[in-house]
Length: 473
Image (cartoon, rainbow, N blue to C red; front, side, top):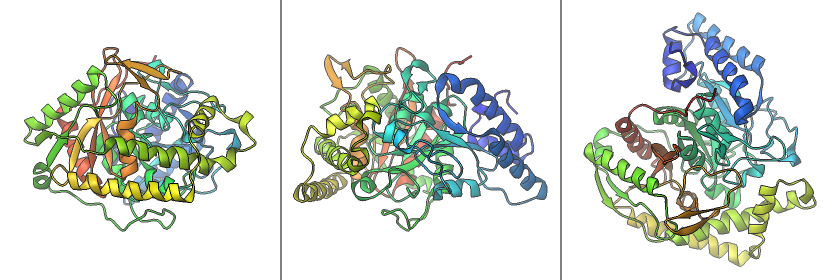
């Protein structure tokens, strides 16, 4: 086995375990040692239990000795965002209002990972109630980016992204209501998928998926390779009664001829929020690589993106603030500065009336139809993930192409697709002048997650092996 087992892909770890080149216990110990050494610098894990991990690994080893059928993730160590139930672990979603809350049972997606053989390492840090694009809270403090400890790992799945990029886990699960899988993946140089709502059950997530949150929020896989993201997606996908968006859509194999025949549209910016020059170059590189292997790619930017940004805030900001309001009322002194800042943004506009929420919902559906009709010609899009790479802790605005980009605007490239319910994957595609990773977004139509992953896999193959952060000591 490689001298750095913790930087192998999940697929490679599983293959070596199947060949008996390494045991699940050896793999688990390597990851636990890595966590013990690097987590104090990164603050990615907030609850991990070494003995429980080793118990799972010994069970995985016993299954091999007995000749049991092995799942695709047998012996692979994975992590879970601390807003998702993992039996016996904290599920606090970064808030003092749930301090010490221990999940009684696994969320369905966690149970499915275990059934596929995965070893659950523990749970990772998130901003309070997941309402930020950085990870910091009053329970555990901030998570640092393994590429540069002075910068954020993103949010709200920042603990997951940092853990995976630094080799503390082989893959994991985040959640995404406005870029919270894709932005951290982009910031930390890994891959992630925001699936179509209903493909992977959100049951067992806190805050609970329901109403407007169910339309825009999802749970999804994060890993160092698209192949690992695909494997985890296939394991976790499927109907569950607790997910209000669940649908009986089976995981499919997309023939290569179908993938190759797709027309792809691309755009480097949305005409409103500028992106850094390195971000433009990353999109150009993605287009060049896919064009070189036979894809037809044309400049194309759907009409309606600015309306989608505004509509998204009506769901995530205005409605989200109303959903969380009763829980927060009377506890203002216990809230983190980041969550209080979010409250200030949500209170800047009046709360929804029945009429305004109905208008937002109808407007969203009309806009979704408008953009889907445009995407009949271009069922796949390539575009930036965010306006900037990972920012320094505490920053709130940036100068890009001579224009000031505000905090809430920098991630609009993700937010559109939450509002529309489109699947979107992130693939690492370049670096900034400061050596920070930059990912591009591959976007598809609802329920065509497999198409998105197939194009992302082709792009990743053209890029070459995954490149990790410099040594952390």
